Image (tube, rainbow, N blue to C red):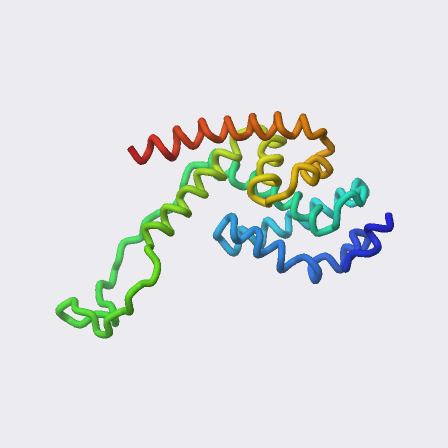
Length: 195
């Protein structure tokens, strides 16, 4: 209980959650889903779930860590749902071909500057992360949670064990299974797709 009193916003005071954690949770969600409106929805769902479950909060972690764990579950649930739904995106046709950046001959009015990054590499990295998160959504939630905490969030084995309430041996088994499942999935969806 003393741990809960020392943090800036108490889990016992939900009115302070948005001010204390909202921006951080939003940035975290946006870095995973890349859509501002979806990130906002996921943060709202996180706060609602936390409000419903705050009686179960034992104080074994900080409020921020607890809310991040809830948000990670919401992100994985969102990705799972997205995988199951057929895409409804429609490509709109251009109705007006005129563009103020080009003259009547199709030449640049003002030539754009050189890019300092390789867009192909950025796209490939984003594409890989999309495949990784899809693969994470397909493995058992508990294994995905252990993998995310250890490999993506960089928590130590002791921290993962504390947060999941498991032994070190159990964490090693879970991480091994998660890695093997992800390896198979990535080989099928990422490596074989490129060849």
